[in-house]
Image 1: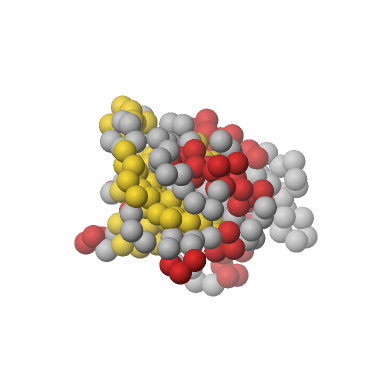
Image 2: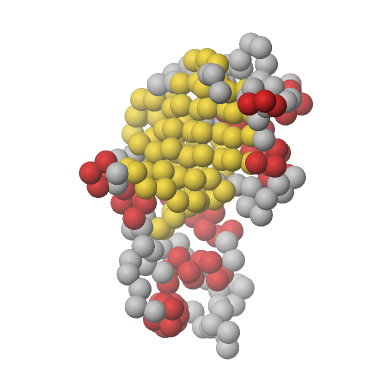
Length: 229
């Protein structure tokens, strides 16, 4: 079955769970390094007055069961403010070199603290310090101002920097309370495979999500249908 995931067409009888297929495509793109950041996805949120905004973020976990993605960000950033106000979001993966695209619509919720802690501790010291040093999406006077702000935050945390402004690799830097993971629970999934003469293969699946508290959901069964390209 795993090889079928990478066939040039979707099977005649659509799979019951599209997230397993989507995960196989994600893994293949990552393993083959089809682009510099094969885990890059465009994230769309809803802003003030219902206006959409979009940006590229990196998917750091793809859980086919129970069916969610994870990215990490500053909780005080513009995108976080938007998705905390309106959790309806959409993401798109597009790998032109292998002719595949995934669209996922769903609901965003904060990751559990332990998930955020685990990922944060895996980052290099410079990136961990950067999470403290940047007030993401806020106005900035100059690049030099940002560098000085980073140095000041390091000093407040008791972190010594070398002559290049870098912390030691083994520096103990805790996760900021304003930084962590966002899970996107899939409610609609669309898979697309490039085809000759614009005879693309395209299908979508939907399911119900029911909040169960603490950012988790109970999930209904997937229902799939083919779409004209």
